[in-house]
Length: 329
Ligand code: TXA
Ligand code: MG
Image 1 (cartoon, rainbow, N blue to C red):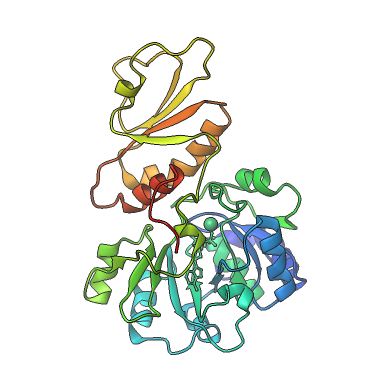
Image 2: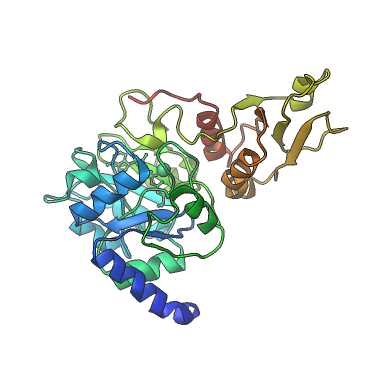
C-alpha cells in the first residue's frame, strides 16, 4: 500500500480485494461516483453486476486499472495519442474507448469490438485496484437508469445487502461520471461529457473533439431518459415565474434547484440554492436530486445554469434527468 494515509485501512483493502478474487461485488468510491466492481476477467462475477443493477447485457462496462500500462492487457492497437492522454489525465475522470484485446469478455464490451478503460484518481480506488492486481469492471453503483451514487449511503439505498462489501470514503469529489472519449473510430469523439472538458482534451488531441450524435455505440449514459430521479423534473429559465399564481389546494409541494435565491419563496415550494461554480454544482447534483426525492414533491423545477465553459457535463445530466437529450441509437 503505497499511500501512507491509507495504512489504517490496510485490512479493509486486503479483504475487499479478496472478495473480488472470490467473484464477489465490492462497491467502492472513485473521484466521480461510487462504482459497483467485479473482477473483469470472471464472467460469473460480471453476470452478478448485471443482475444487481437490472442492466441489459448489451450495455458495456468500464474496466478500471491501477496504472496506464495495465491497459495493454485489455486493449489492442493503442494509438500514441491514447498514451499522451493517459499521461495528462490519468489517474483521473477520463474513460478511453479503445479496440478490445482478444479474450476480453463480451459481458465487459457489450458484444462490441471496443473496451472502456479508466485509471481513477481516488486514493482508495487506486489502493484497491493495486491490491487486487487486475482489471475491475465497475458501472456506477445505482440500479439501471437511476441517479448515480455519490456516497456510500446512496449505495446502500440502491442495493441494500445485494453487495458483498461497501468501501466508504464519504462523498465523491467530482460527483458526475467520467468524460468518455472514443478513440476507436476515425475521429476522436466524446460519448459523455464530464470533468475533463472537451477544451482540455483538445489541447492533447490538437482539435476539440465533437460530442457523438446519432450512430454512436449504444451506451446507457447516452439514453435519453437515463439518470432519472423519481420526482418529475422540468428545466426552466425562471422558476419563480413558473410558480406564480396560487398552488392548487392540497397539492404536494414543488421543489426548485436554482443558482439564485427567490425574492420571496413562492407558496408551497422548497427552494434549493445551488452553487454557481460548475464543479461544486456537479459535485452536489445527484445528492440534491436524491434529497428532493425524499420530500415527496409533485414536481422539480430546475433553472438552467449558463451555457458557459465548465457547465457542459451538468447540462448533459440535467437534460437527461428531464427525459430529454439525444436519443440512444
Ligand atoms: O465515472 C465513471 O465512469 C463511473 C465510475 C464508477 O468509474 N462509471 C460509470 O460506469 O459511469 P457506467 O457503466 O455507469 O457508465 C459507463 C458508460 C456507459 O454509458 C457505457 O455504455 C459506456 O460507458 N461504455 C463502456 N464501455 C463502452 C464501449 N466499449 N463503447 C462505448 N461506450 C462504452
Ligand atoms: Mg451509470
